Length: 531
Image (cartoon, rainbow, N blue to C red; front, side):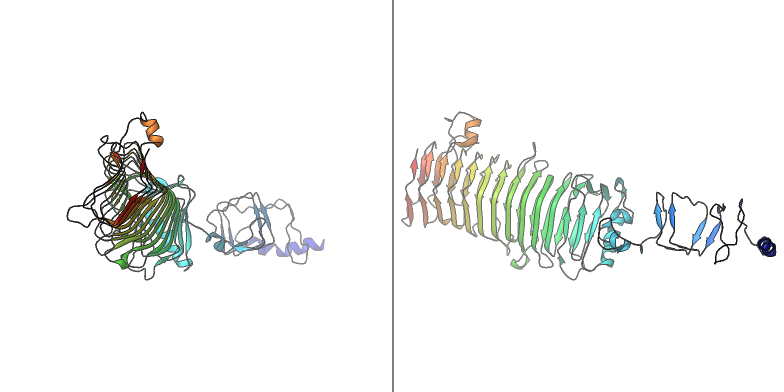
């Protein structure tokens, strides 16, 4: 009876409250805290307002709260399961990945990788995602001055201007080069640019591009898919550069020191102009790009006006292995590889191994230009099926040091190898086969010649080669009795002295193994046999 009297005493204050819960059970006055609703009490909070509540140690499961506002609340150690939280800021939440040993704040966890989707990128192949991508890069700069990873989930991300990456330790990462695509919607300018920015006071160090596909919506007329200037220890790996691209990758040293560029598993498909450009802007030896490594990659042209697969204009150290530069259907590079240093610049320390240069319109490998070329080494190289010219041609008279060994030069339209300039040139232990394809018996396996008005080649050696007809193309392209090359080795009468031509074996050349037209005595010609 005493409890009901107390209830009556409190009724006036209850009646004057602003909102009254709807109840179908009695209220009990049990417990040390005062009022406790019975567990089965029903409360109608639809369209209600809960201001500054504190919920501690709760368990909220399969619940739905709609139409109301919960402001300034503190929720300590809740368990929320099978629900949906919309518009909830949980950046400072502390949690632990299942199986992990430590807890981390959510905002720290999310910064492990910065997704361009978090900054508004759609990746739908329609929306212009340029601003969103640049915003993600800018945000990475604000969170960690040692770099960051900008992630591209599956999708096609349209860009209408250059994506510029400055600073060190940043990475542009996609899920795979077939799933994450950056697509330019303009036809000029670079798509991705690393370095060369006025506010970039230091070189870009340790940046990376990985797992992306880079294409253009329409045929480009200028610019590169990736342009780098003033970088070192740049890594490009598992990247595809494809449709409608003018230049694939251009690396320069015009404003800062560029060295240490690692390129692996690169697929350059349908290149309109140049595949890889190294040091095109170099005008002095100080502006050459230093130490570029290229491995396990393929370079293909689009159309027949593509200039070169690899173009070296200013390079101090270019090392390539496991590379195939070839035609693409009816499309051919003019030169698979072109070494052409600018005046005042140079190309030196070029090392090629397991390097295929195939099916070019003109020379598969051409050395010319006005600068210096030094220390070029080719080992296990293939130079085959030039459509209109010789397989390998040295026209640069400033060349000092060119070595080819253990290689095959096969089925080119004119000479297999043409030496028109340079000193300290060596051709050894190679197979020079089936050349003079454009006119039977008109061109030679190796031709040492002279360019009008230029210095004659000198101090060269041609030793231990197999020169004639034979090999795969001979057996599969016609009868073995069809002989192509005129001379195995033809030496022009005006070529320089100090050469060695020894122990070469010729077989099936129209006129024989060697034709030495020089009259000097500073030479060794011996041990060359036919048969």
